[in-house]
Amino acid sequence: MYEDKTLRCKDCGKEFIFTAGEQEFYASKGFENEPQRCKECRDARKNASRQQREQYTAVCAACGGEAKVPFKPTDGRPVYCSECFAKMKEN
Image 1: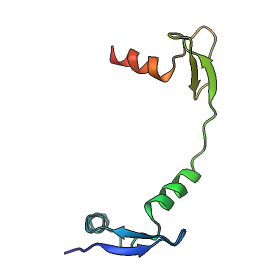
Image 2 (image 1 turned 135 degrees about the vertical axis):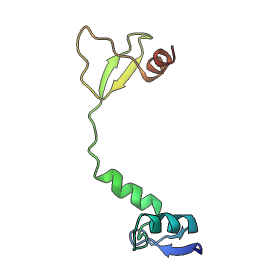
Image 3 (image 1 turned 120 degrees about the vertical axis):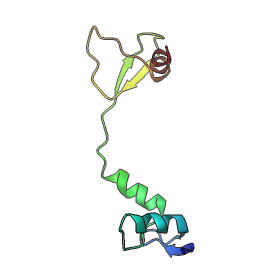
Image 4 (image 1 turned 180 degrees about the vertical axis):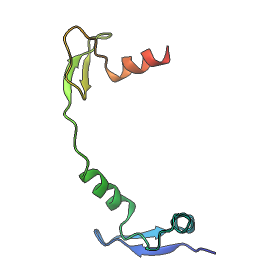
C-alpha cells in the first residue's frame, strides 16, 4: 500500500526517507501532510523550545564525589551522584 518516499528537509536541505511504516502511522493518526523536516532538524526544533534547567553542584553523600543535580541542595539532606543513586534504587 505505502512505499518509501525520499523527501527534502526544508531547514537543512538534506534528503531523508519517509518510510512506508511512518506513512502508515501518519495516516492512522489522521495527519494529511508529509513531514517537512528530517529527524535531526525536528529534534533540534523540539529541543530549542525546551527550557534548560539550572544545574547545581553538590558532594555525593555516599562516595564523596561531585554530583550535578537540577535542584538547589538543602543543608542536612543527602544528595547522591548518578551512580550512587542508581545503586540505591537497585537495592
